[in-house]
Amino acid sequence: MVWFKSGGSADWLFEPKDLADLQDFLGNLAPEVPVMALGLGSNLIVRDGGVPGVVIRLGKAFAKVARVDETTLDCGGGASGILVSSTARDHGIAGLEFLRSIPGTVGGFVRMNGGAYGREVKDVLIDCDVVIRSGEIATLPLRELNYTYRHSDLTDGCVVVAARFRGQPGEPAAIQAEMDRISAAREASQPLRSKTGGSTFKNPDGARAWELVDRAGCRGLAIGGAQVSEKHTNFLINTGEATSAEIERLGEEVRRRVKDMSGVELEWEIKRIGRP
Image (cartoon, rainbow, N blue to C red):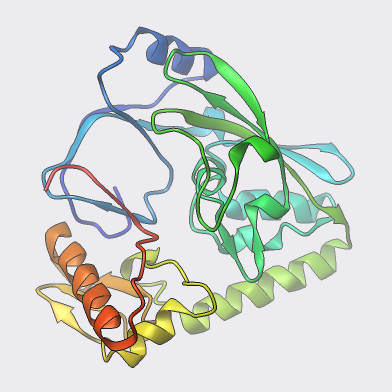
């Protein structure tokens, strides 16, 4: 289930019991069948007609986080940002606190160079393990991902199963204080208790998406059950029984109004998948 609580079902859902199970499944899957990995279901609009092919969800077997050395963690693709940052704190590893605020799993934020509060995955990633459509596993160093803002060169259909992150030595109490600061800032500024998908649009060069949306008069704008958040205008929310079509249509209307007002063409940060 995605955070918006809208949209259709996947044709197939597969939760591998371990790495070998995932490799065997992908290796024997017909190459024309689409594959998509699903983390916590944030940052995603699933269209009302559902998702063709197979959705892969990494469960507990892929949610482990372990210390490699004084500054490095080895993290499963299904581990949450909260677990990664908390484990880093327990081992006195600073610099990963921002992952606390990314509402997703390692696989998702490695794929999209997730970031918040001035840091991005590219600042802390050493390398990652991916299973490709043939079922083979490959380890890709940071440079091969060719990260840009909220984007990597990882191909559709490959599944991020693990990643190594590097921080720096720190005091657990100071790390916790920074995590608390980030958590409080999110709570104060974002509609965390609503059905939402997180940040909707990428920040354009030299501008903030929420400010452009606000200036275009879109705060509180609604289509059906979908609404631009009054609390943070770069968040769309499902106020009740919104369809995914309404949420996506609202996003496109916001893009149109911002373009008319400022000339800036906002890019979607939320991924939209599936059949209309």
